[in-house]
Image 1 (cartoon, rainbow, N blue to C red):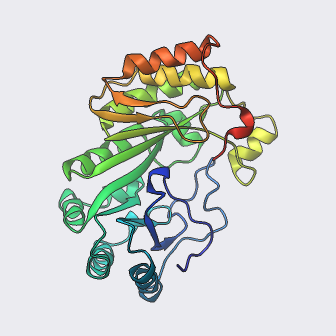
Image 2: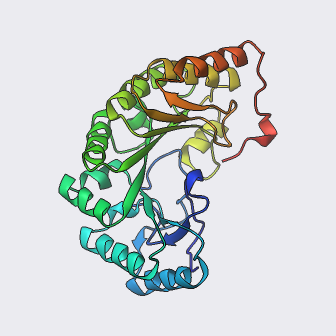
Image 3: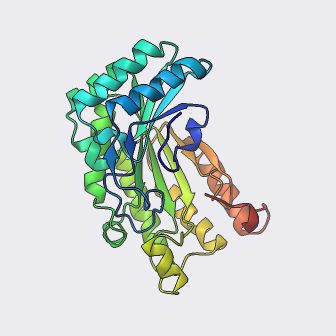
Length: 289
């Protein structure tokens, strides 16, 4: 497979065929994200994409899913996406599901009818980064969105009946805004009503503006106990039913997963045990992005 630079994909797409249709991220201003800092955004040529589909046709016959990389492939024009979907369907007929990252701007650039057309073409899952529902924090990290604009994007995806997975970033508000970050995110996520919520812990990277602020002591990251309090506050403020909740990424101190609202109390109980020292946390040396 012909890739340009490092390829980032969601944990749940570990077994997917990864076809890189864009390079980098069309936004790429978020102060906490170092995934695409060494890439200039561009759309890959028809020839590059066709070459990778041909590779998958020959060597990836056991994989039933395709993930379209990089940072937000959904920003491509409707015509281009449908052409790629058609090529995948024609040459990889055993593939059952297409998925991709889509930021809120890219989602809102599509009408509900266009999103439904993409679903009919095979798109089954969109991964979207909320990171925080607090507008002050979103502005500080240069997300380019507000809580309301991301609620609107989620409504577009839900109307098209496409599975929506949304990430929340524990610690992004620092120590001073930790609980406010959790409360506002719980409120926004409850209105977004995604199919899946994934909570990760912020791990500041040296190649990011926020990482430099952290290294200089100007951004104070919550410790393990404070991260657990933040996680608890988030779950307390979540009011959305039949939603898969996961905090089992390698960055998390306390692996946690369940179904809202069914498992809300049991997840809160597990956090309480951890805060009391009655449930082990992941040792620092085993945490990773």
